[in-house]
Image (cartoon, rainbow, N blue to C red; front, side):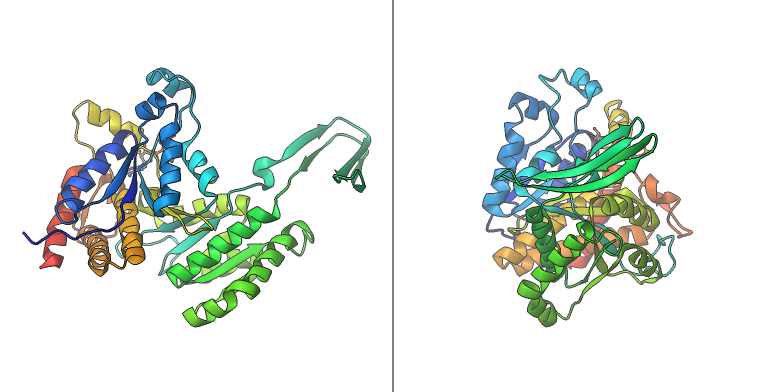
Length: 404
Ligand code: NAP
Ligand code: MG
């Protein structure tokens, strides 16, 4: 056995719940600790420990991410009423992702893991399309009213000194509906910087789209803020990196995305990102083949899987049955975090290990060794559907081959 690969700075390790917690340990035992002298600062975000610490552990893990810069997170339960009962919780704790995002103030980037034998539904797509979704405001923080009958709706802004601005929304002749929504420049600015930084990091073009021709103040402000920040802070860097920033209308963007080969980042306003990320994920295959990373404007990174805790598989696992759960997204959260750590700490061996481990995992699927969820998606004729652990062992075989 060779010496293990050394790390300098610990990763912030956020453990989680149910089937993904089982997978988490398997990945570490089978694919990481035999090869890497894994340095982590461990936070147990499993629901029992969140309850025991009154959710302090979630806050501590986010603060640790600010201290060290890179975190890797397992999927976690966001409790609802059923979970409060199931786990006998003190209260219905908030979504850990929500808590962490509020502390780190980030943008979420989601990218499909592309495999040759799993063909995207869109035949022109050759490379992944990354969706960067703004996660604040618009209809997610709106106020709405049902208008019962004849009358006038106005928008009124009252400044701190009492002066007012007024606009008439509509003179209603009968029943109708109205909504008011907002965003704040500081959030749009941090969204823009997160996107520009991520594009530089990935060396990929950045597209951004809104409906500024119709929404001449609201959407136009998004367009203007992106352009101002690009011109002042990023134009030079993009030129050096050989990448482009490209703005277009959302409907034009949709048409271009479908005709494209992929291989770029598509920044979307909150609602557009919600809709388009599900379209892109579905067209590329499956949520279990999707990576997700939260990038803060200060350059902190938190890697995770895009899917949840795979509850149904976990209950089968508890009954002693073998499950065939896809560990790709969780594995790629680890390799993404290790590679980022390697880059920040100048550890070429660790970076090479992350690359090889991803390659081994992709080879496994390309050679027809798959978990159940991919069986119908793969175009291969020879397929061997394996259980959760067998898949990871098959990855290890290929990793060993690549390391020789
Ligand atoms: P889910 O865990 O993503 O699973 C939904 C279904 O998708 C599964 O039942 C399974 O289908 C399939 N699936 C998802 N990931 C898979 C994988 N890796 N391999 C194979 N199949 C996979 O979503 P959910 O059941 O709605 O949520 C379960 C828990 O996860 C909830 O408590 C929720 O709060 C939490 N959640 C956490 C996060 C996060 O931490 N980022 C995100 C979403 C949800 P089949 O059962 O048909 O095989
Ligand atoms: Mg959605």
